[in-house]
Length: 556
Image 1 (tube, rainbow, N blue to C red):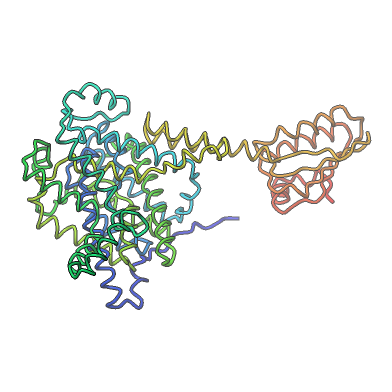
Image 2 (image 1 turned 135 degrees about the horizontal axis):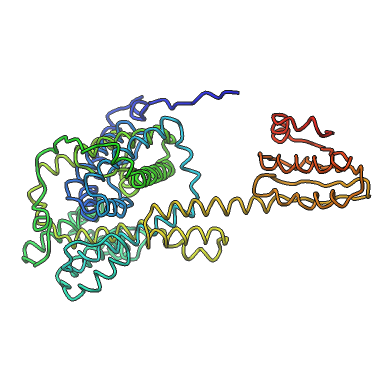
């Protein structure tokens, strides 16, 4: 029977979100978009710099991809843009293939992402085992942290290598160029980011102490303005507070640290120009591995992020196929403006939800906010110290990693441990492409092994002229060897013996399983016996009927 190919309907969530849209929801979305736009600015710059690109590449990716994903995506509140998970991938591609080929890989990955959504394959991403996701997420977090050691310590390394051991070697050889001012700024940024949320968390002792002090001041008639200031401060994103205060401190004290201006010459205030990459099919064939890596990572990251958004927002579930098509369009378009790969970003999406977002309008406001900030404040960006951005990325890496999973390994199965740790170490030592390939292969092999262990053959009786066996589970290519005991009985049995198979508990049969049953039937028939099947289920019966096997056996 011919099955028609199913195509996804292109219907962005923005359209359905406009039903019943009112002024109250608009102000909520506008406030959320403004907040997440401010949060996105330092992260976009930091991600681009850590990836080996200019800071404006990250900013314009956040603006353009953020607007496209919000306009065309399948999630109501997801924020798209450059993500920390891409840092290691992008840096490695630039080192190995060059910037021009990164743009081509990103464009081709956009096409793949769109096709995944168009052919309704978005649900396939959910088949990636959680052990692989945890392994490569933690591995990427380690690599992000390692890549920031150079700027955190202010080391004089012209360009960091891409692989793990070379980075360790470069840091060790240049540790003598340590800049204590850079280290102080970076640590101050990291400590500040860790402490800032706890100052206003009502469940911490710091917050209790602050609240009690406020109460005493208010009772004394002196604390109303302080209370308002504290409420405003609690809403300021930590990265922005760190960026502004430490940049002002470094500028006021003229600290001898590297800045965006000293390394990149600043951020242009003009809009990026449209430019075609130097495209050829010969080049595309050489970029299959990086293209697949960008597409797979983008799909996994965006759909995981959308699932998180569904859980914490309480809004209607996202459409995974529509989300992939939007991610595809964004990644296809962004390289023409000199951008980097984009995907859904968990930190900014969670910020968007907690700020009260109700629709994709907040994502559009987030992009407009970034445009306004860049056009107005671009000249000030030259003073931003790179150690501060390194501190922000170290904080991102810490929050990105699921470190508790290492402690939980003692309660996990051996299969989970092997896949998770294998993916983690392969990500750190080699790269994400190798880690995903080996991780998925290992997961498939272990799955086959586990499923084959569930198939059982139990001998019920053997009277000499008739033997009865019961089959349990799935008879597929990984379990065919377990039919050997029945073949052994047939080979040693007298002529004319009947073999009865109780297959009521046989749920699945594949071509390899059918083949071994055909071998069994021929061996029985060659000795003048007969094969009887009792209790056939629907799927095994359908396989046997298509192959004409039922004509050679008896069924009950």
